[in-house]
Length: 75
Image (cartoon, rainbow, N blue to C red; front, side, top):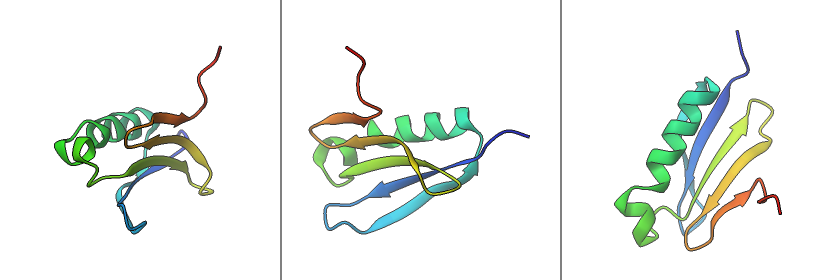
């Protein structure tokens, strides 16, 4: 049994909604990718999407107009 992850969408007013809980890593990534590519994300209705581990630590963070902000891009 592997580590589990949560996916949360955050709106411009900073309210949020968990759209997936206790998911396997691959399922969490696929769900986050789905939410970041939705029309609502392109319009800014979805302002941010995060994947967190079960300790509520951020492992992925996407922001409207900025793209992926965490983890940082390696240079």
